[in-house]
Each structure stands twice: as C-alpha cells, then as structure tokens.
Image (tube, rainbow over all chains, first blue to last red; front, side, top):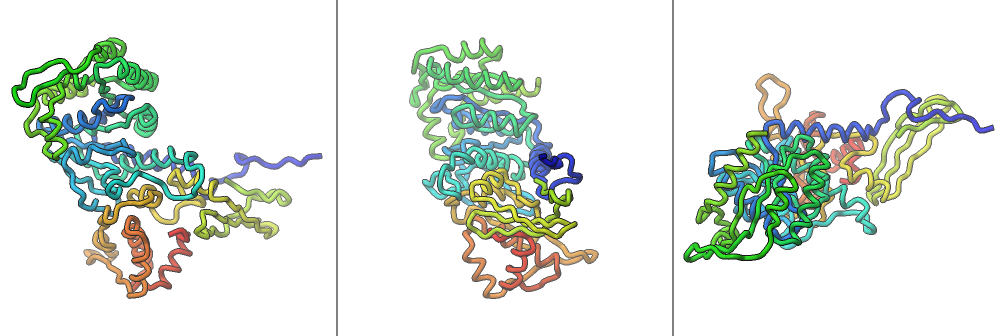
Length: 291
Length: 157
C-alpha cells in the first residue's frame, strides 16, 4: 500500500528560498522606482530599419526642448543606438547604494542603454553554462530590462520613452513588467512590408489592452538638405491604414533629411532643429495628457 | 521548495548552502526529529534556470545590489562601465551625528579584490565592506573575505 506523503501546501511555513516572494519584490521595486514617472511610452514598430531609435532620440530632445523632463530607456539590448544618438559619452555610470545614476544626453535627457555597459563593438552575451543558452537568454534579457527600469535613478520625469527593438517579444516583456504603461507609439515607413510587421505589434498591444497613442510615419518623403524642397521617397500608405485599423491618429509624417541624420550621427541632435519633431512632441503630449 | 522527512512526517530544516563555483549548488536539510540530513544537488542548468530570474536559491543574505543580475551575468562588460561609490561614502555609523564609517583594505585583500573583473568589482567591494561595517571590522583581510563568503553564501563571488 502506498503511503500518503504530505504536499507542499500542507507543510506549514514559507519555503526558505521564497522564490515567488523575491520575484514579487522585484516587481514592487519597478513600481516604486517609476512612481515619480508620469508617463511611460513604448516606441515600437515590429519591423527593423524604420528608424525607431532615431525617432525616439529626436522626440526625446524635442520634448525636453518643450520643457519636459524626459528619460530614454534603450530596450534594444542587442543593437543599442539611442545613447549615442543623444550624445551620451562613455563615462562610467555612478553607482550608489540603491541605484545607478543615468547619464544625461542632449537637452538633459536621462538615458540608460546596454551600449554604456558593453565594450566597443562587443555583442551582448551572457555567462554560464556554455550550451543551449537559448533556454535562459530571454529570461536574462528580461532581467536586464527590469533592472533598467527598477535600478536606474530616473527621478521625477514627465515622460520615459522606451525604445523597443524590432519584433514583438520585448513589448510583451515590457507589458508584464510595467502594468502601468501609458501606451505605445508605433513607428512605420510607408511600405506594405512595414504595414504587415507593425500591424502584428499593434495587434499584440490591443490584446494586452495597451493604449495606442498614435502612428508615426518616418521617411514619409525626402527633404533636400540644401534647399528644403520635399519629394517622394517610397510608395505606400502604411501609416494611414495602420491608423484606421488601430483607431489612432497619425501623429506625424517625418521626412528623411540627410542633414538631420548627419547631425544625429554626429552627436549634435537638434542642430538644426527640426520643426517636425517639435510638432510630434506636442501631438504626443496632447495624447498622453488626455489619457 | 520544501523538504519532508517521510519517515518522521516532519518538515526538514535548512542547514547550509554551498556554491562550489562550477555552476552547481548544494543545499543541505536536516530532519529535526531523526537528525537525518539530505542534500539537494542541482546541475548547472537547474541552477542557471532559477538564477536567471535574479533570485537566490536558499534566500537572500545581502540586499539586492543595483543592476546585480546585469553585472553578474553579462559576458565582456566594459572596463570602467561603473563607478561605484566608495564603501562608506554614503553610510554613517550608528552614533548620533556620526561620521561616515569606513573600512580599509590590507594589501593582500586589495590584491585579491584586483583579481575580480572590473565590471563587478565595485559591487563585490561594497558587499564585503558592508559585511565588515556591520560587524565593526575596521580592516578587511583575506580572512575577513573568506568569512564573508561563507557567512553570506558568496562562494560564487
């Protein structure tokens, strides 16, 4: 006859490891840290190469120019670019008892990025054990993102922009880490290929009951760096179709301007100032303030 | 995770945890009724699956450090990426209006600390310094570091 063994729940008292309690404490820490952040906005696309980080950096600078306190969390852990676009140098990050002080980039925008942690040109890799690291890679990346949220001294911010990588995976992680996410800003280019990829991300956001703040059409046309004349760059109406599907407005149609791009690459963001981004900042503020 | 001595129908109590440094883990539990001791032995995969969450098997012995998971799991972190506040800079002793409490490191402890990768060195230094400050130890020696590793379960650091 098989004897009955008492179950986990029947043994009184917490287990010593308290794994669940530790995970809950991590989540509490995220919430506590972001208590002074009024709005957290994920800048996403689903498709690579549409200029998410470029838009994020210029939008952050424009929001700061408008007098807002802004932070940028570069969630593209494998391909980080936002920090350098905002002109952040490679100075060491100051670590205090309870947090890490984020460096300030252009217009005082506070920034955290894996770019600041990695050796020049080094890919993001994880230690231990050698084989089948895919098993826990996603967990470790989620952990790094959690620490970027919870362990950085963001202070009081009007907006924290989270620059997401291509794909939908990181949005899911962010939604789980941050139930109070204000909403998402979707960046697309006009093409049909972008339409299909961004639509998937927007669908995911809707399923997660995340507010879609608006669509940004990047590279909507070409603006001559010399005379300012604008002309067509690519075909398609992805922004309008996504906006209709998501019942959200197109907040901006941004031209591709080689002068702006060169300034960002050179760490001189906002020189010259691009009024299109000031307009985008105003439109986004109107949307989040109306949340 | 809980351990039950089936013969005695008693919950076993934690005795000790050891991290040999090869990715494995050993945790010993004892039955308070019959005294039998068993050890939970995990392989590197099992250990990693849990530690990837940023949690500590057996419970935390020191508070979570800023970006602890990132600093301890990233391979090839940038030299000089972090500038940790010198231990003692932000702490004060318990005397009213007390001056900042500090510890010093002897040469051998300093040498040993220098062998720790720079990406985590500041964090490890702070953990040892906190351990010493809390126990009124003024000078950190390799023997103090060994005691801290054992007491705090820092065998992996």
